[in-house]
Image (cartoon, rainbow, N blue to C red; front, side):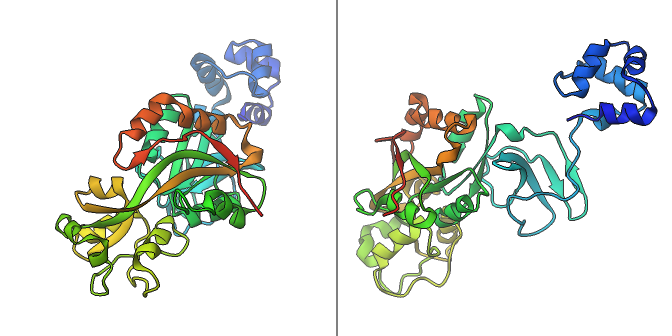
Length: 344
């Protein structure tokens, strides 16, 4: 809502008087004050001159006195995005975002909130570890939906979804032929009332230096090989446990797939688990372990939200599937299929 009425009343002007001074119709002014009419540039400048206030003071949103965060920022200062959630608008801290995410809406330094105009009603927040999420960002931008992607493991993404801090969580916790499946595993963490949308099957396996591929998984799983591991709850951790078995987990951990390949390229580690696409993009060798369904999880209450409908349409779009299917390790078999999470 703009602040034209507030400024007019502070000046002691009636609607008729302000309309006369700004040379606009009284009915038009009333519609502007109610937020039913967006003024033209000419009308906005005329109201600014008549009230002795800047256009920004009259029409740009005011920051809230106390920021309502989706979750408490890990550190300050930080950037943020504005997004509409059930119950109202919240600020999403810009910490650990995907490089393809849109520019921040503002900056909070602990005392002052430096605000910019942003479209919270068109903003959808996704937490996931999909390295190809930038394709979804670009596709949704074409239909006016701003997708913010936060880089989180499957377990972390589900925690944020359970807390209502994101709209959608991406997960890959089970293998293609695992009887539990993503549906059962998500249901154990979230309970009823959630649905899954299949995006792709991707190859998960062990990244290593190209020369180490010849030794196979048996050689790389020996105790003397330095591994970079993943924390419990990450989708890659389940694949890691398949390779290393009951032996001790690696002490050095990466927070995401890019951290795994960085450790190997820099020589800090000799092996670690990640998707084929990430390993090959980094010029590393790769030994496949299994295919994993990558699904998007959301609340059933959000199904009629235009932002989520746009996301579902994007995943089902043939052009999007063709682009995703061209990436190493991705298959789009079953992309767009939906199912409810299983809680029993």
